Length: 201
Image (cartoon, rainbow, N blue to C red; front, top):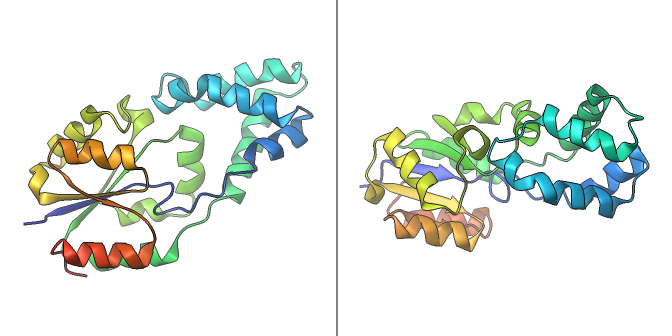
């Protein structure tokens, strides 16, 4: 019997709209966008796992701006860029609101504090019974440990959980610990897949 449904954030609840982020940052700071991308890739893992926070990363980024920008102005610019690119899938939100009537709904995301806080201003986290993030847990998908941690926290057996994600590696990892998983391909197919899994919607 399904008791809980776990949603991924980026690519499921949110559409991917960050393709030009490096270009926007490069233009603002007067740096080649490839350098911004290289910087991000260098620190992405530690930032996603919470070993670095936005202030520490901004201080590191300050070095490639020749120290011309303050840490505060760097963070402010990053926040504005992230906030401007938040694109919530309204159809997925409708599905979540329907599911909340009968199931516990959770969010599990590999994300950084900067992105998480920018999205938080939309108020969407209030839709979830609990939110789990890589940067607060020090764990990330597709590692099995993060799924086991979430199962322990929500106190539901794997067989009672459905996990929805847009990345096949995360789906396979969740399946490996006994969680029934759905590869997200759009809101219409999601509703159909949930019904086939015995979920009321």
